[in-house]
Image 1 (cartoon, one colour):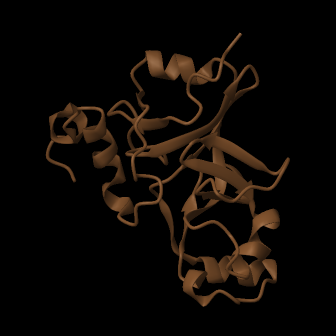
Image 2 (cartoon, helix red, strand yellow):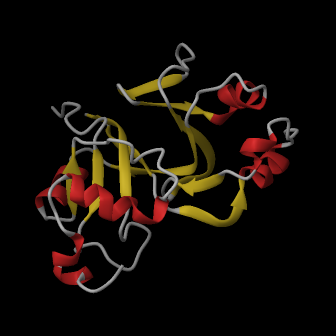
Length: 188
């Protein structure tokens, strides 16, 4: 039976993954158990889509204009119309919030949006559309085939505004120089 050994850790794509959504991805793993694995890509924002556009589509007022220009990230290819909020752990709704690790929690958008709009939400947020998922044992197989690096170090990567460098920063955290990886040598 699988345990939660990857929950709260980062998956960092290796050169084995190229040319698709997971190319140079950093994924926060939120669940990993006998039912499979669920996580969110945290370094790939949707192009030309801000939180204001999403709120308009959901019929919410833009009460919190500071957040209106926040990026919305592609969480993964599954449930691409479902929105989640990855956030700092001081905000919690019983039976609605998943505590991922000591630095990060996740709550579905319906439950947290009103509080965010009122300025009563979490201090740090990352908005994600969709999620990434693996069947039971699938992620373990991909890691054994060197498709992913695993990092226990999250540091400040999840909520870092510099999303373009999250992949290389995540690699450096685990002691890998991205310029030394054969498939990516010379690329940024």
